Amino acid sequence: MVKAQTVIQRFEEFCPQWLSMEDDISGLQVGSLDKEIKNVMVTLDIRPQVVAEAIEKKVDLIITKHAPLFRPVQMITDQDVQTKMAMDLIRHDIAVYVAHTNMDIVDGGLNDWFMEALAVPVTGYLSETHRFPMMKLAVFVPTEEAKALREVLGKAGAGVQGNYQHTSFSTTGTGRFIPVKGAQPAIGKIDEATTVQETKIEVIFPEPLKEKIVKAMVAAHPYEEVAYDLYELKNAPQTFGIGRIGELPTAISIDDFIERSKKAFGLAEIKVVFPTKTKQLIKKIAICGGSGGNFYKDALRLGADVYITGDVYYHTAHDMQSAGLTVLDPGHYIETLCKEKIVALLKSWQIENNWELEAFPSAVSTNPFTYR
Ligand SMILES: [Zn+2]
Image (tube, rainbow, N blue to C red; front, side, top):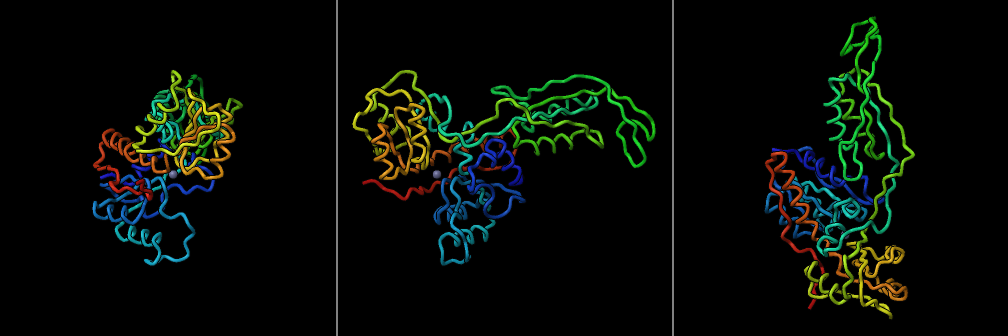
């Protein structure tokens, strides 16, 4: 059996909570992760039908994009849909874990999956949300332990540079110390000057990983007192953003692209905002799945020919039209794509780690809209 926190830990290596937007609900919202689990269900929303499905399918953990509790709670009763769902989940020991905007922002996340479905190669993000300074860790370790420690640091996420992982630099030198009364030295004796051949390992990482990396390093290091330097770098910071911009290899007609979008999102129709002078041939596509009306100026700034986003507000649509931007609104529910994508990831981690785990998408449609 595998613990819920082990599965979530792996999930957060892919999609960390520190990539969430400010004031966003993310992480464990209901129940406990300190329990063994068998069935994990992935959903876009938690509605009463989804709770009923989870109970029926004996689900232990739900991973959802949208939090079930998103309005302030004053009473927990069965009179209110929101809190009744929480009560039912708790009664059946079903934990709920939320990954919201971090799933939109993370590299290889939801907006990348949309672009992949549209066959548009991604060139960057739409709007910057996070900027983290890079840090360097230099740690001194007995040379024979250096390889193992490099491995631990790499696994904790240190040394990622573009498409390269586990990058590091090592130099060998001499470490000197005198253990005094009270010390329990791994090498050397009390009051004896000791000399050890040590390796200095240097790795870089973005600031949010600092705690995790230092903790992993200290736990794996043989010394009682670990000697290390930690400093902020003046190198370019690591940035992340919401939405994506991409470019088709060759320009296509707007009509063809609309057809392509309907197919990619499984829609019979799609809402379109056409400006007075609509570009007939398009190449640059911007997207922000969910509700990204506010980011349309970023799409304009980046020179997008078409912007795809859901929940476009009537007056914002007028602004988009006046600004000369063609906008496709496929609705918020296209985010349901995250279900199968996260299930596929869970299954790959399950195989990798030999977990006894069943991961499946919720079979319930939570789209409140029907088209006739
Ligand atoms: Zn959403």
